[in-house]
Image (cartoon, rainbow, N blue to C red; front, side, top):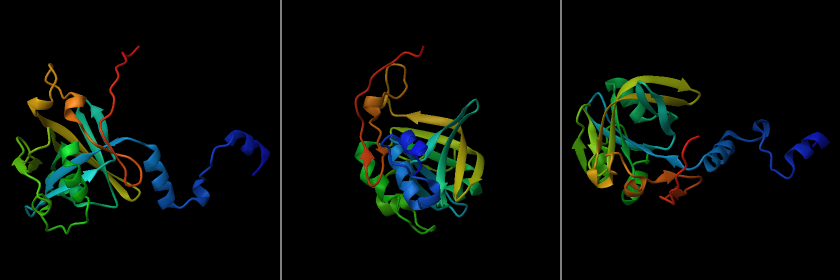
Length: 204
């Protein structure tokens, strides 16, 4: 290592992409970008099979129109279903459902109803034609906005057409309260994050 680089690192460990495997870089990044909220995505295939799977690469893409996104690494039934039917639901995963969420990450065959296989109670969505997780306190119903192919992944974007909220987790304004919602998140390795301390800061 040259002197300038040694001084720049100042005791830090360098993981250079040129000599770090893709798998090791994946482990590093997913342990560093934490916590990651979980999109527990329910969808229905063109053949009518209901699917349920968790995605921790999940965020908001746009506010006008309101678009949320999840990334399916390596191709998943959820992305295929969204492409085929143009609809899906993002269910917010909470601590009480953590084991079921984890169970639905298994590689089920495309003709398997994961609600039934894992024993997750379901209910019809209000606008889109697929199921939502009955006991999830927040269900975000989406119509497909766009799917972007990125490397080995598909970024699935959905325009929000309806949101249902359980009053038990709502604050006075009707919006979810973080403490009552108690969402879980993914961390690195096999670690999951549970709700923690909440502080407030006004934006400048």
